[in-house]
Image: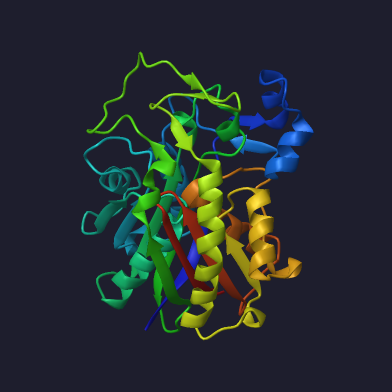
Length: 332
């Protein structure tokens, strides 16, 4: 028995914020400088009335357009931009997509490692014979958490949704996982207000930091240096552990797809992990950092661009908010 990724689709909101748009708003940052620092030219963002759930339904409908949705028997919805506290978004998506009411459906709250965790849960459901065809949807609208005067975060994040079908297979195509968590870093990437501990305060003014970015506790806060330190300390170890758990060496890999955070950190990771240019995938120029959706978008594009083909071995690794991280290997 095995589990296999059968289909991937993604959806990007129509609204686009370009580096030129940012230059016009923040005169001190030139268009070329933004690209040089981040590797991003454009990022898609949801409209004011558009939610992560809306994006999720669009991605799900795209996948169901080429697959018999009556065969789907479990739904996993990964988001940190929920529609409501309750009910769960997965329950709403089940109805909106017209899936059978006999399926299981659950939300998971994870960020940049969310796709890897979703794959691990889907594989577990298949191995336990709870399900045969699992629909994993990731959707995020971090743009709604970002202060409109917070250039540091505006340059990085975009909104998106993906839909992945993981099915029962005779072959083992999704291999072993390396997962980790360290909640001591929780406050280094956080939206403090809006939950039940700290309610959203519409009158709360933003404060300017040393770099001129403005935000309040209602907004997304990211401690860039600490996130960088976490990444360079944990990702190389997880990369090696993922290879070891699957009895592979770096020479066995055809492609490596890390969470597409930003170009600077990805190139740094490529160097310290010793990954050659031809095996390292970088593709965030037109989407930005779409959190849990970066890996499936990159995987879909890599297939479309003929970077990988049937029989290839690909290592996937996500890392970020939580702190949370995870890696796995898939056979195309």
